[in-house]
Amino acid sequence: MIKKVVPLIIVILSAALAAFLIIIFRFIVPVESSPLPRYFFSWHLNQGIFEFTQLYPAIALTALLIPASVLYRSDSISFAILKWHLISALFSAVLYTVLVLLVGPLSSDALDSMRVHSIVFKRSLEQAQSFIAEKDWESAARPLAMCAKIWHKNEEVQVLLKEISIRRGTVYRAPEQDYTAAVVPPGERVPVNAAEAIRMAEEAFNKGLYFDSHWLATLGARIARPGSTESYKATLLASQAWNMIDSSDISIQNQARQELYQQKIDGYTALITEDWVHAYYVFKTLSNTYPNDPDVQRFLHMSEQALVHKAFFIDELEQRVGDILTGVVLSLPVSAIITQEYPTDPSSSDRAVLYIDSLSTFSDSSFGTHASFEVFEEDQGISQYTVTAPYVKMMPITLEGRAQTLVLLQALDRFHPEQRWNPVWAGAEQPYERSIILFDLPYDDLLILAKLQRGMDNLSITDILTVARSFARYGVPSKVFSAELLYSFVDSLCFIILSIFALGIGFHFKVHARVAFLLFPLLIAVSITVLYECINLFRSLLNLLCMLALNTYSFPISCAIFGIGIVVILLISLFTVVKQ
Image (cartoon, rainbow, N blue to C red):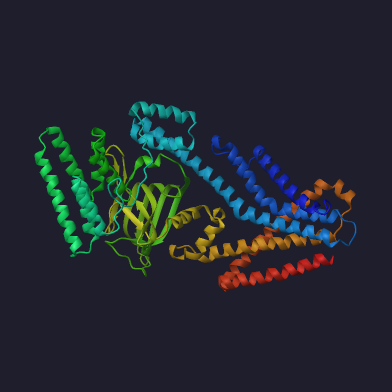
């Protein structure tokens, strides 16, 4: 039994040994030195893994060919032995598929990510040093916080962080916030309709919570159908609650409490007029002075809930570092941009271009620096309007059941209302609310579009499926990605055929065991070198054939043609091997 499974054992041991030797070799002789000392181990490890995925086809075919040529002197081979050789070929093809479609892109993406992280680290460190030389401690804290997230144990970064902490007094770090889409007082559930909002407002009124009652009644009036009984009842209740708020103001005799109450009314007025930024800073200031006041805490929470879809805090950029992309350029049709003030024509050929100098991406949000957004007339190439923002945040949002992407252009300091980073608009037309842009495409699709900046080699098979299916409207040529998808499918199946052909060649051309033993290193080296070049040539031709097929036929027909061809060639190769 052991003799029969020798071919499979040889294939497994060859792959494991080759991977080990290549990785060790890349630690000793790297193709490219580590961009940052902290990445030394992972950089060389991923270099070795990526190179192994490139060499594996030649290594696997060599591990199939040489045993078939050396182990058997007789021209006739039993089916039991042949079966294990075919199983070895199938195992090699499966492992090849995993390496090419999964491991290779992951290691390549990891190398690119470390390379970009090092660029961002060095650039941020230079910016921080420049701000420190100008004694601009507040501005220096942000790029230095980015450096600390990438390489916290760097001695230079630690020294600069201590210096800035001393100069600023403290470095603010806010806790993670759990935001929800609905704006309601804490502890209250979201009303499903106007009637429930009115009922909740009445309950708050009876408890003497007049601010909450007014807010919920106002919410009910907005939900209710205009002119309906519910709309009238909600408006009346809101008026009654406001009268109680106003009368409470008169009854307060203590000057300090009078000032507090006036500030509450100021913040609350900003809430009901949807001036979320002003409301946040009013209640944030009050929460520092009156931390135990329940009204202040409720309204601070509500303003934070509403603000999450209007602006973002600058310290969110400092809290974590994700997958960083540089020089991101996204070209989108104007029809993919949504705004109530300026409806777009779905048939319009105008294009919108979004450029972001550095983009840090996460599954739930992304943060960019030095962003610009410009809309062009496709026919004349004239810019209609442009907006630039020093910082942006992109996040997923669902409106009317559609997954979309919200881009926030305004950054705020969590504690200092005078420090804001606002967008700058230019051009004849400025159709949007000045601090947000809404894209009619899912956030995950936007991440894939951004990831395309690194090339298709870093895309997973699921990403390629998404791109080939729906990205034509975003200016991405679907045929290119359909060809990549077709190539990925055909390449894996063709490797099975190549493996069987390697077995056939090995069975046909016998090498004496003594000769093979004496020339074993040379035989291995020549086989891997020749097969590596032949496989690269074969894969190039296969990629070209996939492109030609898609230019002539549709994707399903091309898949059918290649599928039938592969089955026919596979049967011929199996018949040839079995006949031997």
